[in-house]
Amino acid sequence: MAFIQNVPFFSIILSMISGIFSSALKRKAARSVTIVLSAVVLAMNIMLTVFMLQTGESYTYMMGHYPAPFGNEIRAGLLESVMASVFALILLMSLLGGLNKIDEQIQEQKQNLYFIMADLMLASLLALVYTNDLFTAYVFIEINTIAAAALIMSRQNGHCLAAATRYMIMNLLASGLLLMGITMLYGITGHLLMSNIRESVANLFATGEYHTSLTVVVVLITVALCIKSALFPFQEWLPDAYGYSTPSSAAMLSSLISKSYIFLLIKIFYRVIGMEVVVSTGMTNILFLFGIIGMILGSVSAIRERDIRRMVAFSSVAQIGYIYMGLGLGTREGVIAAIFHMIIHAAAKSMLFLSASGLIDVSGDIKQFRPLRGSGYRHKAAGAAFTVGALSMVGVPLFGGFLSKVYFASSALDFGGIRAVIVLAALAVSTLLNTMYFLHTVISIYRPATQEVPAYNAPSKLSSAALWVMAAVNVALGTLSVPLYQAIARGLDMFS
Image (cartoon, rainbow, N blue to C red; front, side, top):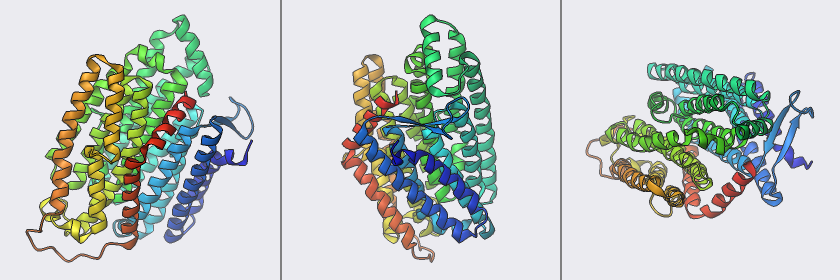
């Protein structure tokens, strides 16, 4: 085994060890450790991605060199390394872009805990991407849930505490359903290793045994991960969790946490149960339906908002709907489009939350649209970043969101029938709704101010630099998307 093939193991272990050591460090040292860790993990996974492109093959890594069921197993392929790189990059940029607000909004003695939770969240994200064992996935889902709740409530005001409580209630309900599904699957197959479960399920599906039980398993696991990723109608916890937490927390929650659960669901569909089994249960039809509804109602809710951060939060409901609509097609092209949109949305939404916070800072700390007038001039980096993110989410050509919609439309046309008509109509309506609230906001931040602007501090150079980098990444995703799309397609072929 080449040394670089240890990257998944090193990435997870380094993140966990950093969380442990950060608990004994002062806040500035813990902050430095977390930032350096994110950069190191990013560099390692980029190198692994290059290696995977060269070899074109996935591989497994036995933890402790003991085979399952006595040991744990990691599986790495091109799709996994790409997602791990994306997660590490966005976490790094989210922290750098929101450091000034962390210092301002979180009590000094609790900032150490904030960075510990960020380390553990990175460890859980990487574990969900790379693990080849269902029980390990469940354990790290719980770590992810605890870390996310801590990141929400770190601001220590009433809104954040209520949002964290609501988040925990919904996610613990989902965890219970997920554990029930995994337990039933273990009872049917006798395995927890994903590849072994896949073989057993394929045999059971071929013989027709346990068809009802397998259907129940698919329903339990899918509903659990839909709740955790905020698919309509399970999105009620999302606006407050994203809208009231610190900008870094909102950026990480919207871009990383929800995407890790969707990625795990795709992994379970392809590598645990089998896509043909999932399609036979009718679950893809349900995901398609609620994805379409989420696309429309999420945008309608965003239009009704007058708080810019809650507006951006509600738009996440719509974008999650896009992803589930692609999964609901149940085809290779639909899943590739969904994964592509996961990456586009992750990059854009983290930038939108950070830039919205910057615009609010130079507008008297008021989140409504009228006081935001002229803020694009007062904070040039935030204005440019918000504009780039908005144009991407609307689907303007040369931006990633436009290509996502093209890929969704193409995959629907390949599918054919009434479903293709529904997808095209939903894309058209959703794009119109996105235009109404995103471009209205862009116009607002560049309109002349109609009232005196309160005194404000100059934007942080570090946060401005992070926003410029994120804007450049988003533009690159739109203009240089073909290699990414091809990597996703190759990775999905390895994946399955």
